[in-house]
Length: 429
Image (cartoon, rainbow, N blue to C red; front, top):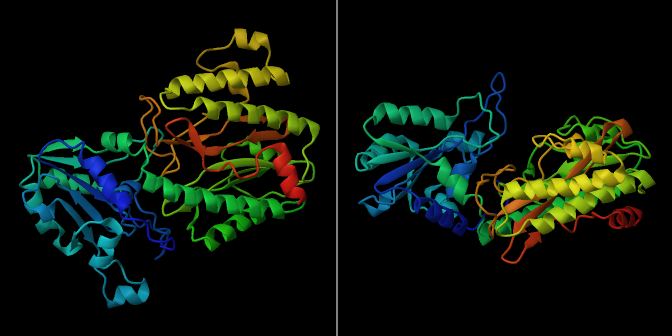
């Protein structure tokens, strides 16, 4: 954990929001992610499960959180189980949380070692009527791997078959979509670190550099600012590579006259930033690049203006589609006839703008959140329209991170150069 310790108020508040939605006399259980093996005795770097992070801040493997707000014994209403450290672990891996450190991070007073889990949990479970189990119910999830939580769910139903079982995910999708001010403070730091990365790279960008060299510049700046690194696999796509939406090879040379698309964000304290910019490798946009870029920028700014409290996301995306249709007509990429004959399920603009405009942002890059309720204060979304023209070797996307406020929005990433004039002036300076 290289980031500064977060305020435990984040997690105390998150637990209160979660437990307020539980049925009476119920407990809920959450586990860490696994340590994923590669081959021989190696493992991938540990990445904590976002749900236990959201509710406790425990950024350590083999942790278990149990919440039982109606427990008769007050000390069993919030319990964190941790891997007990020892001298051997301390020498080879570094010491794990002490019980005092776990309390400072999470605000949870009752901390047991994992060796006591079955005994303590049994005392809790026999006094509960129902158990909330967790899983992955994200709309975009496709998981083939059995997770640690899956094994826990099997263990629960085998050992406590008489309990009623409920799902935690519907509650989490409702509450995680709206951020507290404490969470937003951390997301602002992630945005600041990301901004520093972009400004560093803009000074480094020139004809002849390689995409992976630009990736290295970002990583240097992120690590220097106590980020663990990229919030997601970075996309650094020069020229026609930008027309591959999830291009992650980052292995080509940047050529004079082309644009390079950066879809890069930093993580800080496990909260993410997600930004896209397109910069001219030579420092100047061509006339055609400027024409298409400004069309995307107008859609981008128009979409941000539409994203206000009370907006329904389904309506929002249709309205953005109308903005994009107007711009593509102006560029001559589609015709009025194309629009008149379009399939409503796949409108004419989708030929050049085939992905969604926005997604929730938070601990996960594609964070939890409901798509069936009005937008409300405290939600955080990306806004990322794009135009992709493979036949011209031109792909442009512009993305910012937008906090919904009472009267409109706060753009967390606005200071990253975005207009043609801002970009050219910064690169020239």
